[in-house]
Image 1 (cartoon, rainbow, N blue to C red):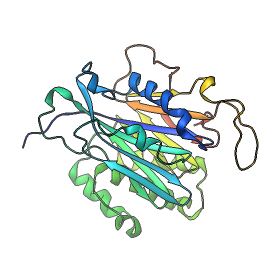
Image 2: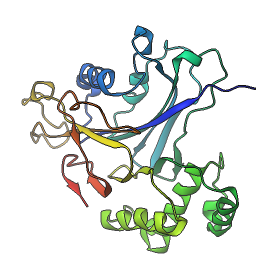
Image 3: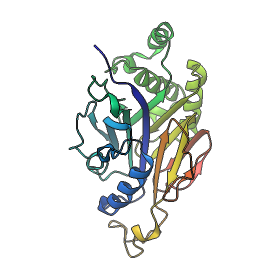
Image 4: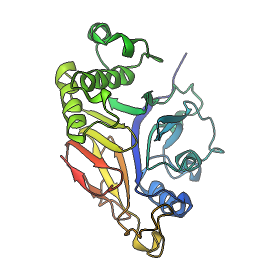
Length: 283
């Protein structure tokens, strides 16, 4: 059976400190993704790249909600509907970008988000050698090993990250300290001997963290007009400023020109963000 070639996996994270009404974000998100997500509007015929599957997840309180569409044969389904369906402070997604010129071939499934308790994770990187992957699976604690679903490399790396976080006592806490999460991400790469490119996003709903090695990571903020100054937080009544939203978009290749819509390049390394202050990056 012949398969259409996977061009790349694009990772996305949308952080909003007060997601009390996500409708404001839709026009800005559509514009930003149209300009920066390969294949997002392949129906225009202007690109040889096409989105043919995605997986979107959010940690909401003590639950993780995931919507996976591993194979999308047409664009009657709008990915923005999945991104904005849950009013969560942190939404993570992975998009499969394929060659539109080979659309008649069978499309392999897109990368799928992994989850455990309130944790979400997704990885884009080189494949693990089968023998080493089997060895790492044997090292997983029983409670994580039993949680395997698709037995993909991404799931294995995610569970290995949780195993290291568990060793440090992080899973015993209601919310792990951000510095512990960053240490576990860096330690996972060292323990598994992962070579770049390797990019992984994780979130427990309060902290978003990423290990970024290879490719291009862009950070976008809505223009001030998209976040009205007179909006108030419904619970406390406290006004919040306009710097409340961060859209992170990782793709394999760096853009040829300066990113559109105010995008900024994020340097490689391990960093975390508190979703209540999504513009304050800590390394």
